[in-house]
Image (cartoon, rainbow, N blue to C red; front, side):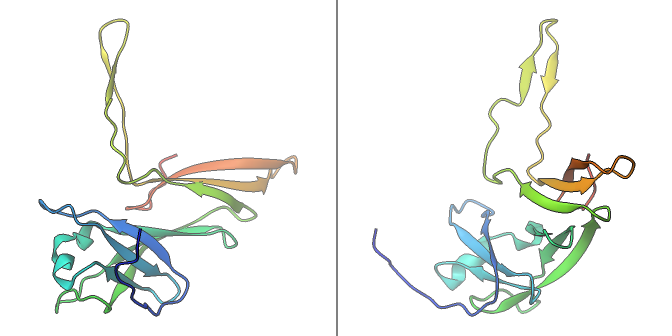
Length: 168
């Protein structure tokens, strides 16, 4: 394809989050998040498209591999409204620190836009087993040493990225 438009956005290290439109619109937007500056930029094709996105229910997270911490943020919409190019302040909602000596080696989250078509499974006794799918679940794998034997171990955590609660 051809480039239809180009725009320079001045920001530091960033993370790109696709926005889910609210209402009947099928427009695709993005949130460019700069965790170091604690701000985000809402990106859309036209300025009027920004009103179709529900930023109030958009939560982002960062994984600090070196520090062994996972943090959750929310972009705050200013009272003056959204405009393309104006930064949105990020509010740190929670931070979860792993046990001392553990290093994060990997993290993974489900695709937010993925739809699960089979929410139940019929069992042999004709009862139904319901699947619990939380699109805000983050899997974190950490490496550390066992306190008793000193052997290396792999620790796995499931974290809710909205509340910061350790699910497992």
